Length: 395
Length: 198
Ligand SMILES: NC(=O)c1ccc[n+]([C@@H]2O[C@H](COP(=O)([O-])OP(=O)(O)OC[C@H]3O[C@@H](n4cnc5c(N)ncnc54)[C@H](O)[C@@H]3O)[C@@H](O)[C@H]2O)c1
Ligand SMILES: [Zn+2]
Ligand SMILES: [Zn+2]
Image 1: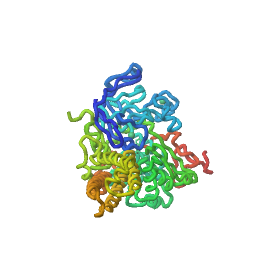
Image 2 (image 1 turned 180 degrees about the vertical axis):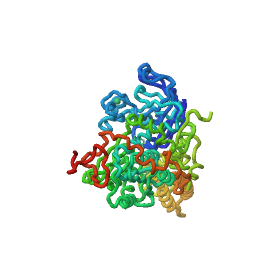
Image 3 (image 1 turned 135 degrees about the vertical axis):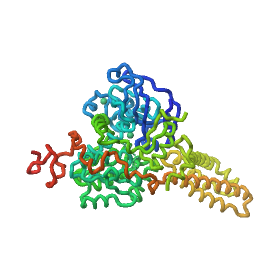
Image 4 (image 1 turned 180 degrees about the horizontal axis):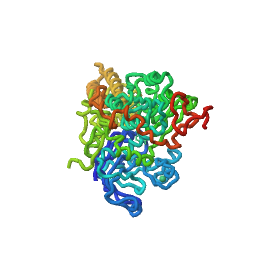
């Protein structure tokens, strides 16, 4: 089969790879109909997250049709079933899964020892996402092996196009959980850093949950325009001082709820901490750039909440923990517990409350995926979200 | 600015541009040259007819190897390639000073300068290309001002999902809940008369 394979920093290629086979009774094989490139893939593309190996297959936003099922998953899945595969691999039986904390499932990371060393304790196995989270082959491919398939799937009905459903695998629940974590009150001002796909989903979710005002921060004009269309008031961080703008808009009190939908590759325009981060990163003394986190801690209203869906991989520096502590801020973060929200969100899509496909700007064959990584990362050609179609490759 | 400058350097079917590939090449070149300068400074010194220049050549070697390793290891080689451009200028200045009429090896020095000029040109082209491909467009290249995920204008959608029950583990701690007298309090979570839980 064809698959997008990681070869090194900035180097992803569409290669031939062996077709996946059932390796365990609970496995299933999916024929992929659509998959997408995520901002998290960019962190791997740029090699900010450790634990990638040349030859790894990328991708964790995947949907398709079941073509093979191991004996242990036959009660849950039938051949021909249309499914979305959440990016978190879950057993459905451990204590964390039972609590709904799916992204920290205790059983699915087959390289648990590595993660225990890096993080103290391991989280769930993830598709196409470094050996720290199991090193499982990802879904930017023609076929995907789904481990623990009896639990790791979301069944979806026929008759709704892929585009409307695909993002249940990751970014829609991620933006949703980002907003849920804010416990939004009708009086709340919510500020969201980053208007990439995750930011856009977080904006929609905050509006649906009834935030009084939603501010969206980015510097890419198309992304800001989309955020505005979704009901946000926008701040261009290349033009204005974000902290001042947010304070001004909230009578000097700051927003009650702040969301980091940017993660470890935050950009900053000419601030001291940005230069400091760049220098330390270049010398490999710090792995992640924390500009957005610092800004959020600083501007958030006392007793407010910081919600951090943005991904961090390792160490950060110069975090104003004193401000965080003295202001009594609550911080909530994590990889998304996709299956905790997916049924409710599927219902909202079916009822027409929201159609997450609005972020898609590029749909191409899987073989054009490598070029699209670059287009997406460098925000060229108005790119916001890329969908790849393994069935539409040039022969 | 649009994505135009990188398009020309794109390699079809690859996530790697010609500039990315050139940067790696320069990284290996840097290490190779640096090792030669470290291992055989005497030879190089004699070939260019500059006496007592071994220590300078060795120092240049250290610089070359370090830059080369940084180019190959870093997430983004751009600053290191610009660093190479700076290094090239120092090399040129040093070599040019050996070009005086008394040096019997001045032909070799001239050849060295020629090679340095070529390397500098490659470094500059690579650095400019890498810088341009990371440039964020400041003019919108597409109009998404009407693209929202909602069936109606956002102001009609505000609060449409208030039916959602925030799970207990994601609620704000009760004592940190901002107290605001003028607003209706969500059912079951209101503060009591004394600001404590009922
Ligand atoms: N928690 C999860 O489960 C989960 C799931 C999916 C994605 N993510 C993470 O969410 C983040 C965003 O993902 P995405 O797909 O939207 O990626 P993206 O790269 O498309 O979006 C990031 C956006 O942040 C903007 N940005 C950069 N610096 C900024 C700053 N200082 N202030 C404001 N905005 C800034 C960029 O211009 C860009 O538009 C990534 O870190 C990704 O890894 C997390
Ligand atoms: Zn993702
Ligand atoms: Zn589990």
